[in-house]
Length: 328
Image 1 (cartoon, rainbow, N blue to C red):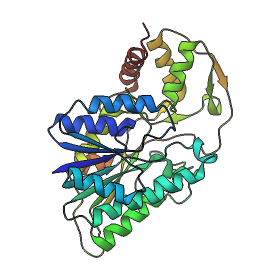
Image 2 (image 1 turned 90 degrees about the vertical axis):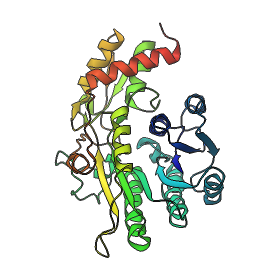
Image 3 (image 1 turned 60 degrees about the vertical axis):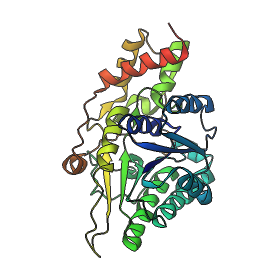
Image 4 (image 1 turned 30 degrees about the vertical axis):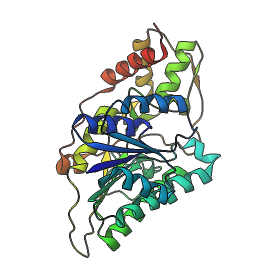
């Protein structure tokens, strides 16, 4: 029996696939290898995964239901699906809204249709986002908070995914778990994320743009902790509680520490041995001032316990970044 991971050439999907392969699972990787960021980076991740005999790959758009079915039939049967593929990024959604409808809405629907018509899929785990909390001022963010005031289209699509999953769990009793990720970082990370952008600019001697004049907080979560949490969730599918309790859960998955952005920059400067020239700018549209994950639910149900503070995780990223780019 196989596990299908969508977005397998992406940041989290790559790390999850590698961890699953390491524990002896058969993994079917799905990705469309789009050019939202470096295709070469995605290919390099795939090259790592292809070293494993238990890994197979299909290039496929998430909204291509027949393509997903063909991959499942060729390399299955599939017992679990982890849907990590999505059009990511808050700022990109301001200029490319239809990319989000195609991948995050129609794509998620296609994955649910694949699962509900399967005789073997036992559990669908899917990526949501801390962005669903919008401008929520109460910290830490709890899964019991209202999340009906998104401040970006990206956030709106992720909340829509949660609602669609709840309806499919209710209608078809398909066990599903949604994970609201909080600012994931680490080796093999995404070039559109702040840590990569800052690192690249500081090494090149360019100034970095710091939004809201540095008055921002994020629950930065190291990717190894995220992967441990995903696997813990995969191993603990939600029970069907009957008509009033469909088998659907949503969890926060974060570091449970809200760090000042300027503190991250200080640790990065120390790791690089260089000071950053900062350009302090106003808040960007669609952004939020602070995120902070209440992780009590996933800790209680799945034993999730993050262990990597940013003063450990950021130097690890810098070490990988230099090695990947051949920087001495």
